[in-house]
Image (cartoon, rainbow, N blue to C red):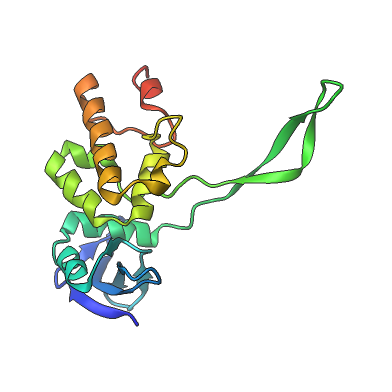
Length: 203
């Protein structure tokens, strides 16, 4: 059963200028860990927007600690995620080589979904490595894995690494790659997901 953890008294403003009041909820997940999410109620008409899982903690006390430490910047990002439409599913035709050498379209479509990224690690790092560290540790494993996949922080021979690595290892990998990018370029320019940083450096 969902439990109200924290009620935020300061409203959070959306990109359209609407004000929302946030509340943090939590419950025990099927794996025995505590998961937390945020609910935003719009001032004036009580429209509610809810995020997906925002954090996963080993116990209730740690989840409350996470919720109580959320900054207004984090809440603004969470509100944007809650209001954002579901990611589009792009269906493309798969090409196969046939014995005669002529490529022919397959009758089966392949669905490709870009991982949903809930935090831009480069923008956050530009505000301070400690802030990025704290924000990443507040996220769930699913969100960390999505960041690593979207920004291609896993090496080519690590196809199973993100699923087996610990949460600490995932956070360390993200910080390591972002720090290296900043050291190499001396820039705080945002890096787009799904485009290797080496290619963007040539833009």
